[in-house]
Amino acid sequence: MASLPSPAILVFICMLALVPLVHSVPFIVLHGISDKCSSRGVAKFTELLSNWSGSQGYCVEIGDGGWDSWTMPLLEQTAIACEKVKNISELSEGYNIVGLSQGTLIGRGVVEWCDGAPPVKNFISLAGPHAGIASIPFCGSEWFCILVDTLIELEVYSDFVQEHLAPSGYIKIPTDISAYLKGCKFLPKLNNEINTTRNSTYKERFSSLDNLVLIMFEQDTVLVPKETSWFGYYPDGAFDPILPAQETLLYTEDWIGLKILDEAGKVKFINVSGGHLQISQSDMKEYIVPYLEDQASIQMMRREISSYKWLSSMWNSLLELVGFTEDQPLLRTMV
Image 1 (spheres, rainbow, N blue to C red):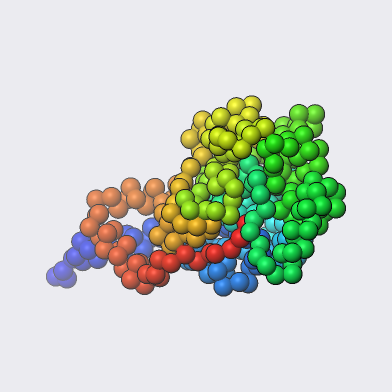
Image 2 (cartoon, rainbow, N blue to C red):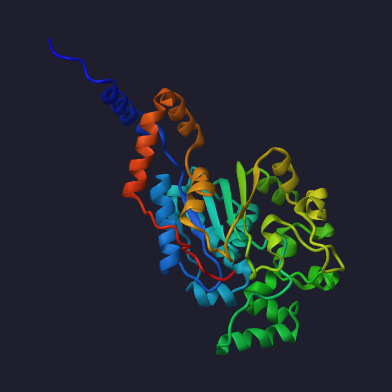
């Protein structure tokens, strides 16, 4: 009489049978300023997230990447991203967004403004200047940076600077709010700040997210203040104190639906160690990957194999062995 398969073999067969249950929606990556999809850091970042989550990832490039990320107005960058998203057939049933710094604002623009686009499920933001920044990101000493400084000196809220310097679209000088609301072309619209033109559709679309993951970097000196990654900012008229998101008018009057999301438990405020965008692979696995996986299917699998925790532990160890064991930051880009 043939012997019966061992319990371990049966469990392994069951796990194989359950693998199809874990399927993930695709995601897009929107990189930060001075970067491009083909750069080593962004390409590796996208590849690792795709490998770990089992989900197809697409880095959406706007123009030529680095140069256009500085010089193309953010409204135009968002419009291009919108059209590209609608033309990627694999996203048609819904997708997730992973935004890197300036790319998070473009991603939010797609969520709020992109008519006819597929639904966004989870939005993961790394070092996003959501409430604005009070100074231009450090550029350097090259000729282009000298040009940037000259443009800023001309008047950050002038039409010329707004049309030729992308970061000017989210510079918010707290002691010059009237000029900001009048001249800044991007962030006041994105955050629904202007009372006379406030649009309920922006709020409706943004508050429809399943999850909003806001990752702030503890040693971030590029974003001023770094709490803008969590929608925190200075009060109107002063550079002190830094208000938490929940004490800002954007939240209390709920201009974009952030309060709705937060009260529903859908906002995750994550603080990681590191400078601007210097995220480790372990933090990527802990704070990003879970939101790129199909949660219902994963929970089903976990219930099915909960009685075999020892095997699950061994399986995870094997995955670590065949994966990347280095834990160095991949991204060292600017906004």
